[in-house]
Length: 213
Image (cartoon, rainbow, N blue to C red; front, top):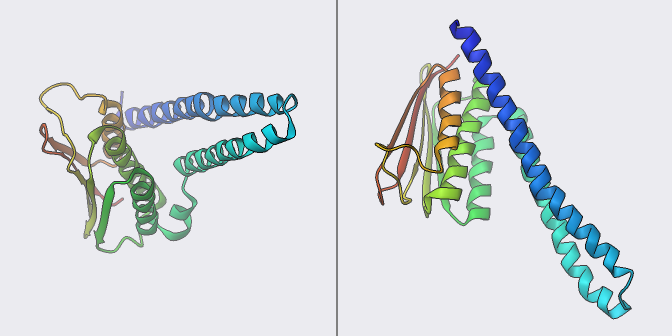
């Protein structure tokens, strides 16, 4: 199998995994929450007026949570800000959202001209950072994360470094493995290099170098 065919298969496989993930999130998350709200609304028909007034605020909170979840899923699919404002604003907004919602300090810095990056490169970079930060939030137990994006001529350098619990990289990846595999696949599609440095209680560093194409 040629390189182009392997790359195409990798893209298709990645898209299929993304669809499956989205389906699970909608079914297990949003779908189940909507069922709970429907049951609560049905139950209001059998309550006194004062009981209804007590229950409504709880239902409103749950509806707000579903709206927030749908916004997150929509952002995961394709952040509009990436198309409209470019990779720097998109990454800065992503870092701010993670910092606000996960209560982890996320420092973002960049250097170099990113204005002429094509849409494919910007999307890959955004997804890589998004996946890395999701791993940090879910598994690392970190309090600080540094995201750095540097362009030197036609080479992009990207790093995501956290101060979390880390892991032994000489063994099979822990529960973060699937997320790291997604990152590696995207780096491969960029014809780039991927390195991960980690040790127990010493945090994790994801280092990426890729050509601009």
